[in-house]
Image (cartoon, rainbow, N blue to C red; front, side):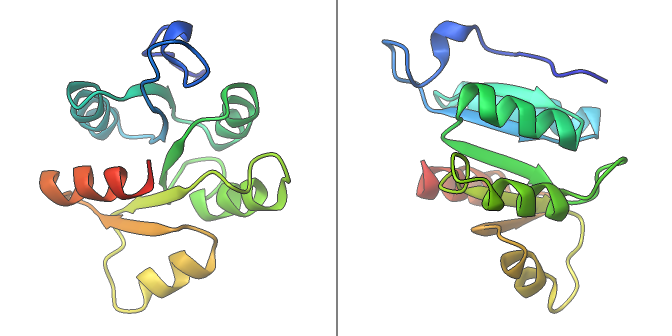
Length: 137
């Protein structure tokens, strides 16, 4: 379960075309495809991984403009990965948006306390998804 690089390196924010780079951390293949397709169609470059530890490596390597973080990952929770990101001086400024099926009362507060700047419930509203991403990039 390695990372899938869906955008060429030239699309990273340090390159000439300046497309914002979004790291998608999502273990569900259909959700990953949906998020990737929506972002690419709206001018974003993406990196993808299904693995929380790989997400840390990719964040250090590519310094994305935004991270979309699934909370329920198989090996380690998205909140744990977010905590590690926020503890890293080089990565803490990267906004993290939690994307999760948790939609119970109090979950948003728990997710924000975990270090995420915003929260999107699954199934997503396309308009809300795109607006939330735009708010942080």
